[in-house]
Length: 252
Image (cartoon, rainbow, N blue to C red; front, side):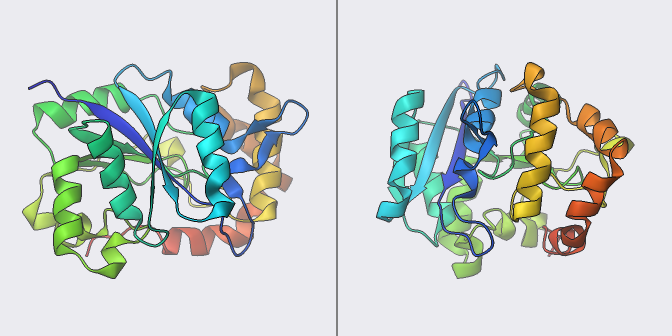
């Protein structure tokens, strides 16, 4: 059977520190939002067959239905807390065998290895590929839909939250998992490229402005060089890096 890789993006506007993170503008003048750059980048990756939005219930999230229609994407609407169920529904809607997962508030994907890792995922008959150790916000996950369905059936509330692959990670002996090592220059615990705070947004806007001629495929190694050349930007996000990495996935 031919495998079908579907990118599922869980979308919601609620946020304690910064409301409406996915729809914040990276380019205010031209109206390029975070979610626009994510979707446009995913569309350049040949192995991704379709992009589906998994939208949280609530009128405040209706904007994502409009975005889906603007972009010609299909979408599902589901429980606000049970993010995993939304990803599963995205996969089922699109007849996926596997899900490509990125978060909706991280505009700069480490896209270069995706094609090769999708090939490896298939060759090794893996349940999951976790690109974990790259800069916060740039990683991704490739997970079989079957493994996500099993996680939802066997897991509890915490496993169905935004920590969608936590069950697989806590029961890693039961799954075949590949954890590739990113290039050493992208293992930077002093950097983050995800938008959770106003300072994160300010930095990502400056980064996008510097590289928008290459958008949506902005190479993360080039962003790292840019930030190293502009240490004041690193100072802006440094208060949030320790907490960010501390709350990222770990093996159970």
